[in-house]
Image (spheres, helix red, strand yellow):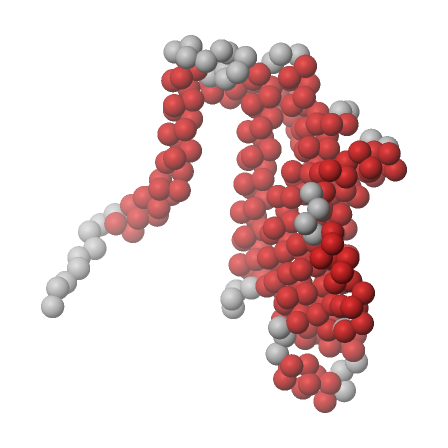
Length: 261
């Protein structure tokens, strides 16, 4: 029988190795980017060196300009996402537990889900203008569908024995929804929110690019108009970092809420 020996420091090297494996391709991409740009293999306007982009990113952050635009973008995205969570969770639960609700909402969901919501930007501008309201409502419209679908799947698959037990104990319909169905469907609800989170950022970003004003999307377009490629790429890096941080935060929250999963 073989014997494995853990050498001192192994417990530290393994997490480090796992982390390196998760980021090595990104590091390699950045290195190639820097080398190609520094050698002048592409025009500066097309691809400035990563070091120049990093300097611009830091300067925009220190001046507060990037922070301001990021705050506006996140405020719009979160407002739309929260609205979608409220509406989508309620509709999904009703569809999963009520035949009449499923009969009414299912055709609307089937019809609306495949539509690329970005194509509705002109309509929302026509109806609501180019302010925050139009952006928030379009984000909510796009995010509500994955939340509805996943919540519906979770609510529909709840063990009926749990529902019957609560009913036999005299729980009201509202109490059963709150104490039995919603907790049982929570993993699927959170899955829908995880899908909707990047969608909220994408829709907000694209809408800001089109409508102008303030926000990360408009800041990127400003860089294009002023022929400042470092602003364009710095903004892209900022939105990618924000999306990554929010995704990891949501994963941590899911782990805390669903420790039993």
